[in-house]
Length: 264
Image (cartoon, rainbow, N blue to C red; front, side, top):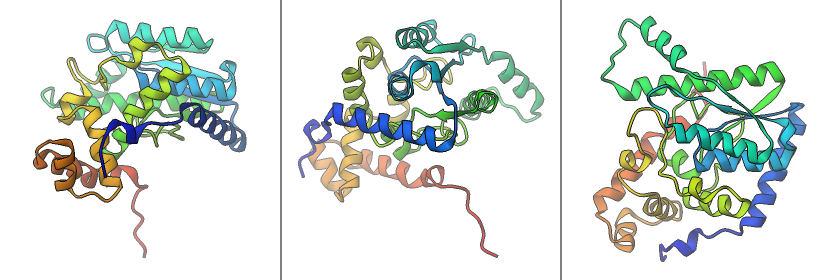
């Protein structure tokens, strides 16, 4: 199998229509009044909001921008608001700094030098705020995780992974960009450096150790039965890098499954 960008090309209009139809059907069957989408200012959440607004109508969608002082870039908040304004979606901006700070102060073992544990608290605080809105207004929480992140476990369990539906969860990051351009997400947002925004200077690709263009083809090869050696040879990357990615897939399996129930 040839691993080129051609294998990841999608029929964007067909995919858009299918996702919008599925969102609409899910909301109607659930009896919910609408949906809530957390807007980070990045391509994934922007695309998710575009699709949700088209599926339901802007008046049935709540946007939430949940920045942290000193960590969230002002540009990201502005981009989130720009997307909401473009779509006609209400977007509340809620600063989570004090909530997160109170959580840290309440934990006797909190360690300022452990950014991962602290960052996961932030993701779970955002999930809690989203579900408050969902409970308050009878909404479904629509997540914006993509297939690349889900496969390698690059999300917080019960944080950004704590949602009701994942409309773009079967699209690799490179496919998300294709669809985002098709539906009209601003190009500067589409090509913005991806970041979870959990600490200053964080970027997805730095943490993953590989660009999404390469990661997606690795994952595609893995899904289609190629060995690590075959993937490495095809992409001209060290086999150790491929094995590292596949190890992430295996070790994060628990994140993609419901809690284990012991049979008694």
